[in-house]
Length: 162
Image (cartoon, rainbow, N blue to C red; front, side):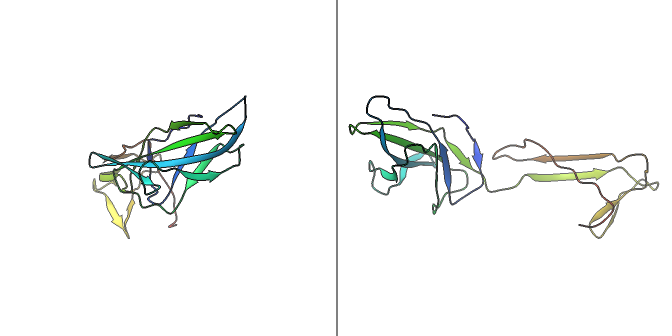
C-alpha cells in the first residue's frame, strides 16, 4: 500500500484510497472494496450494504487509487476503506486504510484586531477595518477548530474590495 494518509476530509459524499498490490506468481486479476464507518462508537460496513460482501471495482490491474462517490458520510464519523486484490489463482490479499474523519465545519474566529488608528480604536467601514499606519500592519487573532485543529492561516491585505 502507498501511504498518502489523510486524517480529515470535508467531503460528505466521497472517499478516496491509494494502494499498490503486486502478485509475482499468477498476477493480479481484479480489485474489490469495502467501506466502514465508525460513528457513535459503532463500527459498521456501509458499502456494500450486506456485511461481509465485497464490491468489485474492476480489473484495471495497474490501478493504484479509487474514489467511491454517492455516499452519505456524517460529520465527526471515521471512515476507512478495505481494498482487496484478487490474483489469477483466485486468492485475495486485503489491506484496510487508516481512518479519515469527516469535518464539515470551519474554524471559529473568536476575535481579530488590526493595528489601531491615531484615535486608538479600530474603525470598521463596510465590514473592513481601516488603519492609518503606512509603515506596516499589525494584526492579532484568536481562532480554534475542535474537530480537526488549525494547520495554518491565510492573511489577505489590499487596497480594493474583492
